[in-house]
Length: 306
Image (cartoon, rainbow, N blue to C red; front, side, top):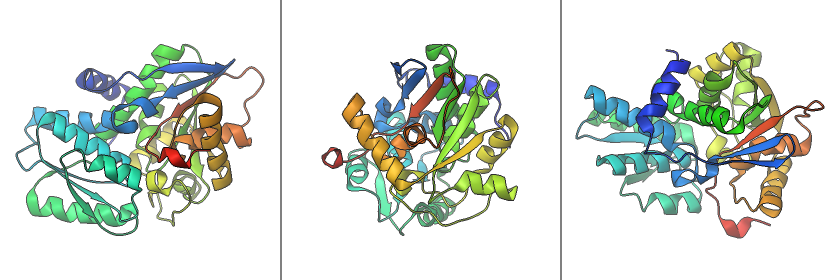
């Protein structure tokens, strides 16, 4: 099970017109933001959801049973949105700890919402059971080839929009985004994975030589809270030499506040995690190094921004 650059290019053609081509801005000399927080539903996730559903529709795999999905919040929104746009039913499983800002948006998307457990892994097991009972299409949050290929279209756009750059910083939870971006641009730039220190799923896997389960926690756990890195992300990280970096909760909070104060970007904690690596010094660019940062999620309560 692999994803190729050609898969990403085909995904870009397939989802064209369904997703936004989000802007890139140069915020300082040598520093560029890819504003994927402006995507439909407030994160990059619709790219993968649409590619999964449209591929299944073309193959006849998408039936009247609709879809099931599990998520800490952002994938739930994306899967429900894509299903509604394509006119198929969606049953979405989310943890009981899903933030109110995400849950409120989810309730507007005509999906059947089931809250179960305290973290993503429990919601995922419930979604698998529902899939087995109904034969609905499972839309995985991060570890399906079609999902990864869809997320990789962020990287294709970045190459087209930003021109030359040396490094891209990407937040990692289950790894769908970094797997896609590494596949899309890993031959052109260094890819740096940025994870919360309390949820180091990729770094733990790279150290162990294989994906392993582990505890997750911290301020970004609702979006970056997978217990285990996806197999596709692990493979891409090894293939393209992804460099892992960890940031603590204090750095994530500071980056989120700085994105609001300095750039007027309202991000969730997961959306600010990649920038936290720069702001905290966890990643220090070399002199003259050109860096792009993917700002990947906006689903937060604006009242908590300072």
